[in-house]
Length: 306
Image (cartoon, rainbow, N blue to C red; front, top):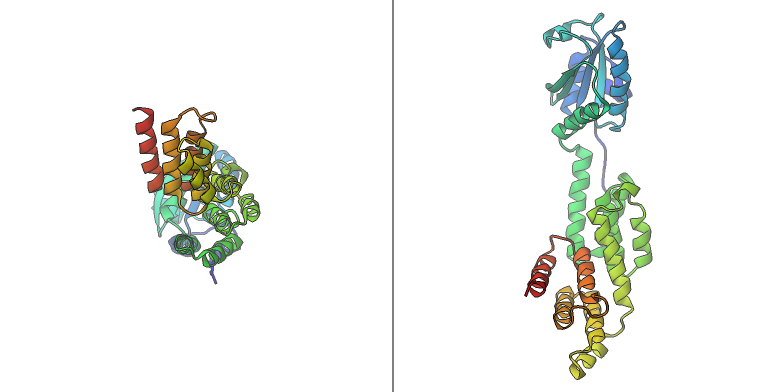
């Protein structure tokens, strides 16, 4: 089973934002930031700009869902740490990662700058233990799928989705498992779990193309009939087109690509440029960095510019 968890369990555990003290600084900031980035805001009740910045900073920290935490320190009551950090004016904000300050700013900032500051702390901390576990599990699943161990891969992808429902690698990976087993309906249902703002992410686009291509290839019929038709008439473009799709569906994409390239070479405009459009669909389904995509695009370019 995939075990997920971790995170600071000391004074920070009560919430993402707490009130700190000079005495508690070692525990709440130095030690806590060894595991989770900590934002420290030096403030005071009489500071007007602090009252503006504070809620914005707290909201940005809260949006990280525990990836960044925040400690507020009232310098009127706890001036020691502020003095050690040479704070000359407030609001003053410091970001701690690994027990040391890595970034800081003074005064009120725009929302975009606050978000940038929080994001930089999260990135500086690197992946959490849970994220590292998930990435490792997904790497195993990818290898399983590449080795045609579809059931094993599907189990891992499903476990990751249980822990991180919007993880795009897990969503698209599980959808690819269903495609591999011919269950296109469940592949579509799984892809629907992808966040709306990720609809055009390359991983989602690739799987969507794989589903469309599988549906199209599944309707072509027995490729033996297309081979016979081409032996009788090498210029039977429809037979060559359908044979290409059948070969892709049979797990022979390279042969399918070669037939489509041959078709395009013979008649570029056949069926409204169908050969090239079909090639693009295959390249999209394979992914932009797949060796067959790169090789096929080079061959297609050589035909176009010949």
